[in-house]
Every structure is written in C-alpha cells, then in structure tokens.
Image (cartoon, rainbow, N blue to C red; front, side, top):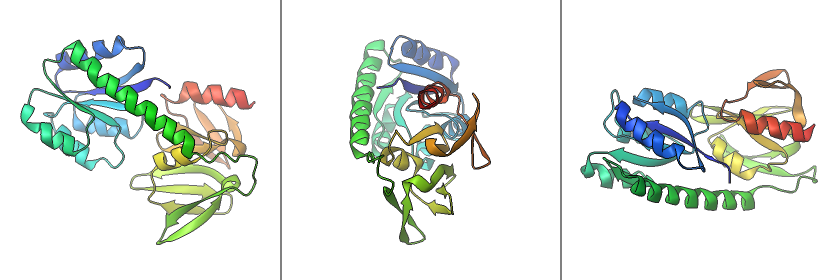
Length: 241
C-alpha cells in the first residue's frame, strides 16, 4: 500500500502543528499540506491527491461540517475539534473518526489504524474490480451519458478529465460526458493501461505522444502532472519506456 497523503485543516496554528508532528512519526503517512480556511481546503482537494483530511469544525468562511456537505467525492475524514456536540452530525456525514482536543498521540494512533485498515481493504477491492483483460483489443466499458449507457472501447480512450460536477471521457472519435467520478474510472480501469496523473486527469499510456517531468502530451493536448502524483507517474513512465 502506498503512503497515505494527509492534509491538516485548522485555523489554529498550534493545533495544526500538533497533528503535523504526529503525522511525521508515522511511516505510512505523508503530510502534503495544511490549510487554515474552508476555501483553502476546497482548493487543495481539487488540485491534490488527498487520501486523508484532518478537519477542524470551527473555521473562517465555512465550517468543516458545511464543507463536508459540499464535497461530492471526499477523502477519508477525521474530525479534530474541541466541541463534542458535533459528533453525531459528523458521523452522519460518514467521517472516519472524531478526535476531541487536546488530542493524545495514543488516540491519534487508533484513528490512523482505522484509516490504514479501511484503505488497505479498499485498494484490495479495487484491484479485484479492475478490467484486467489487457490483451483483448475489444475490451470496453459502459458509461451513463444523457440517460443512456454508452459503450466505449478501452483502446479508444485518450484521457479522462474531471470538470467540476461531471467527467469527460475523451476518445479518438468523440468525447462522452458522464456524471461518474474519476475515482469510479480509477477503480474500473486496468493499471496496465491507464494512470491517474492529476486530481483531474487519468491518461492512457498507449496514446502518449511525449512527456516531461511536469506534463504529458496526448493528441495535441497538454495534460499537467500533479505534484503529489509526479514521483509515481515518472516511475511508471520509465517502466513503460
């Protein structure tokens, strides 16, 4: 299992520093950023590959609970707060755990154990669901678009792009708009043929024209490589060379 990318969200600097210091002690965790407002969190979730969010409830502009309600495809969330009364509402939003401040390292570890267990099980299930018949040129998927199921050959997919509330599947001949999430495609598609390179893009290895450390070109479209994906992307591309 790869390291778990963590973001810490709290408007109090000391509270952020405590969680950041705990994260640094756990080898399975990778701290990729911290935020002090709901808007900063929202922007980071839309640009980075975040697996786990430590989320305070009382923050400027928008509360943690309000933010959770707006997220269509949230990462795993651990609430960190001094307010016990929000616990029920947090669990109704399917949060992983609810940590009351001041947070001890022992209690932090219990929450992380839950995260590692859930993430490991999820990755195992995803691997079983992937389309693995890579040698079959006629392999395909169906996606729902405009009230009908559209058949798309895997060999025709150039890249898949997440755009706000929908996803656009770009193929050799056309583009198909669907309300499936990028995570749905990431679970379904073979890792031998496709790769997530950015929070908003999945690309097909077979259609890459060129690449650099920062971007990939497919069918004259320049696709950015996300900072948190870069190392793995480069390793996979070098293996394909």
